[in-house]
Length: 397
Image: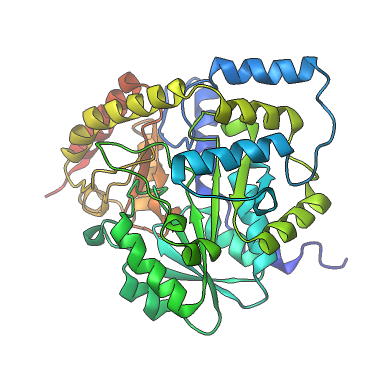
């Protein structure tokens, strides 16, 4: 029999976040009291006004195909949002709506990368960036943002990583998995390098609305018209409006790139789900009270759970500024409790302490684990108590 699978999928690494979530679900179905801290989605329902708008659109018969790049009314809502929230001006032909920000990123890499093109990916990174780059024939080039640097890369690191093959750099702020945010000043220094080296900036801003303690999100595209021209902004309503399952994301940027992405989508997904598009119109045009309520809830959980987690022996954790993740370095805890790796430590937390966390190896940060605080404070505190008990019971001086 001829080879069944294409070479391009043979090097794919399954999503560690989805794998852990599936394992936790399996244990729950067996009656085991597992607390899952792996989820990358808010634990709130989609706001009622958005649900109502979706139902209304269906009742009106608005259930047919839309243009591949998105409904004109949704594109306008996105344009208005970018102007209102980010002081960025775009035209309709500079916006493309896709099946979630993940699909938008996948489509973007497919249209900008040729075989062997390099994409600079800061560590720690979202699990899908390297896989999507490889699927497009590109080569991931990793640059480590250490804990001492706040899990962010420096302009010197970026400049040193650029070669003749470099096509783009990914900036994810607020970051998944670290929750750290690049300041305007930091973005200015990175943008200067991108401009000097003539590379595209992929700015993933999906956690834009989830920022805490007075820290503000700033889009790198806001710096200047020249920087905006080389930046593709990727965003969506999944995290901000608790609409993960609706699968609506978008890209805004260079019209030629946007057209290519739209053309590719027309041959792959056609349009994003029509009902979800109408729901997103309401998400952006309607009241934003629920967005702020969710942000405040996450901030409150962070303030309460962070010191408890930081007090666990062998845990070193920076306080995040956004998103809803904590990324403690647990290398010492793993070693002192008799485990050869953090991955093994994380596996034991699931099977012995009944707490599901994501090993940092999936994010390029082997010494860490990622915990999501997108769950109730009661469960969070119980999870931390279980982890603390687990570590102390196995600690070996």
